[in-house]
Amino acid sequence: MKRVKNIIIAFGIAIGSVSCVPKLALSEPEVDLPETFKYTATADTASVANLEWKQFFSDPMLQTLIEKGIKNNYDLQIALKQVASSQEKLKQAKYLQYPDVGFGVTAQISKPSKNSMNGQSLNLFLGKSYVEDYNAAFNLSWEADIWGKIKNQQEVSKMQYLQTYEATKAIQTQVVAAIAQGYYNLLMLDKQLQIANSNLELSTNTLSLTEKLWKSGDTTSLGVQQATAQKQSTELLITQLEQNISIQENALSILVGENPGKISRTIEMSETSLPQDISAGLPAAMVSRRPDVRQQELVLLESNSVVGVAQANMYPSLKITANGGVNSFKIDNWFQIPASLFGSVLGGLTQPIFQKRQLKTDLNVAKIQREKNVLAFRQSVLNAVGEVSDALVSNESLKVQEQKATEQVATLKNGIKSAEMLYKGGMANYLEVITAQGNSLQAELNLASVKRQRLSSIVDLYRALGGGWK
Image (cartoon, rainbow, N blue to C red; front, side, top):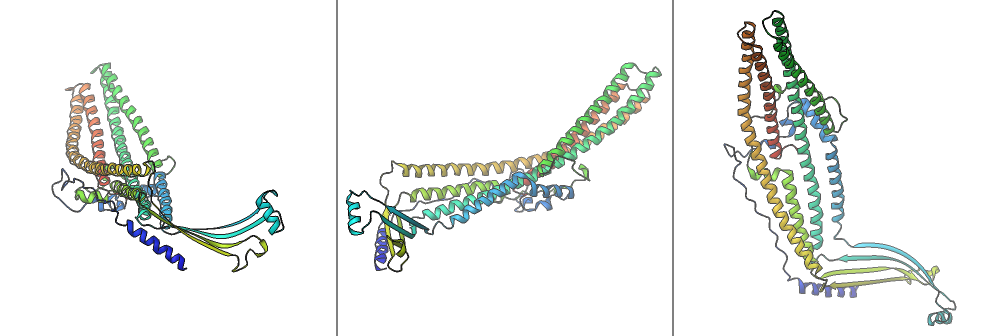
């Protein structure tokens, strides 16, 4: 024990002699964030993204779809498996600071040449032509974490685990938003189908009236043909809308992890309810809330630790190895204690001198990768601010568009009534009626589309601000 103590003291002095080597200074990157988001009237610190998705989406049918998506979506399940895998690696990294311990048992029989010195010596001293050796021993190897290499390796594993966790949250925000977008698109198609069916009824009535007028000689056959074409166009539109509805239902089913099928909905687009007075909060809070930005920040922190590992590889390393057990050249006294006991301790201090520039290259590459990750982090922040700004301006613009489209629909519906009255009274021709009906149809379809875009812009803003993973 005294000799082992002397070895440890000697290596302690050696470590102290090189401990003055400076460590690499690491600093967090600065990002240029605006004080407030563009297109916001006030700098409200609260944000709609702080709402849980169940609070943000109040429609029970949509909530059911989102719950299914979070539970069954395969992208999310794959991400969760990645989290579990990284968690196992993180558990293993916690043991890096402990020594490696192994146990081995060997049995060896050697028979040298009878004409060799070893062969003649064996026959002379042991009276046999072979020698046996039986060994059972524990082996221990431990590296002292002088420069923080092991600690940095543990940090790398920790950052990688946290990245998978943030990646899972980012995927959930995308899944929640995609389900909501698909659901609102389905409601829009339902509304457009309802509009088309109503217009088909108008077209049928117009065609019937035109045929009566043609039979009475008050219009030409061209009027009947135009009215028929108008009706056929509406029937074609209905078929296309029914096709789009089925495709959207299939897409939503797959998104929630189910086989393609019907999607239940009990409300119309006009009955949907989303927060209207949306507060975006402050950019700094958004950056800390968005999982994808947080993930990129963790990539940067990981690269910091990789730089630390690369630098530590250039410094001296202290390794202590030990082994001990029982050894004998006869099997019958192999485990005689204490006669068969043996042990050894070895300490080594190694300083890399010439490694074909490998260590310096590794360090420089690690530093460059960290600089790249700084730029990537800043870019992710810039993209996040841009997405929020885009969603804000879209939401404000679509408010105005929805109002104007509503007014246009009201005007054109009145135009249909006027055209029909004038047509029946012989003061307007069939083209004016057909044109009025066609314009009204397109205006109503456009209004449904604008309403859907408005709902989508609110969902986009919720996601862009970092909402949806709670």
